[in-house]
Length: 294
Image 1: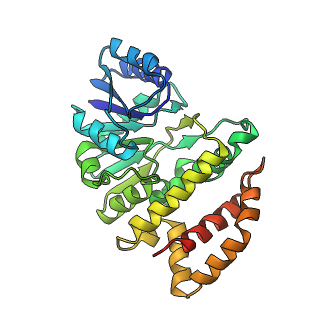
Image 2: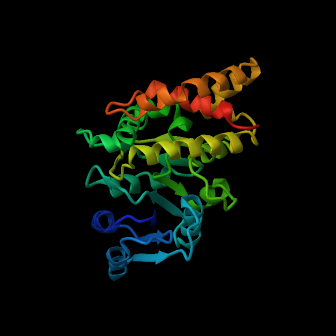
């Protein structure tokens, strides 16, 4: 028994829904697919067609609450204990995607299972190159690689989890923050929940424009500093926060802050280039976290 849960915002989720329904029917298991729209202004007509399908529901938040809160609402609405979370802007790599997860349900227990991400083999236009090359280099890893550092690849856009574990570990506050997978990973780690990765990837198709992804990444840095500063061993989960703590301990934080202010425009030009330099992206974010007030 499986509840497939999809938060969406200004994205046409209908093609994903039809593919998932076809696979779920063939997998021969009781299921439901719930799509919760986070107060979108686009694709309402297209996504409303979802309600015509058996076992499928599309409904809307009255106001924008953010993906994390929307996932919590979906989990509470789900009628089954096993939850499969997917982002709206993805598509399964294989026709056995749902079946593969069905075969993992009996192994959940105190475990969360992640299927992984893939990106198209052909790069997009320059305006979306940063998100593509970042995802290709940092997120697209096989299961063997991800399982060597399991908490470092916690991406909730392709995740099988029990309702009990999810509601116990998901961020409880209603703040609409970006980058909360880091905190979710820490919660799993601190509560001794096993993280296990399998080969059951989805293609991430909804690539943001360079400036949009760049700014979201800085929002994520702010979230990391704010949230991981409040917990124990935050540096064990996130490398950026770990390097920040090292600089702070060595009293090099202010030097890093000065160098960041001096070099940030040059770094950004390299980051949003047609072939982005991800080392410069790492240095920019490290300098940025050092520049934030404690």
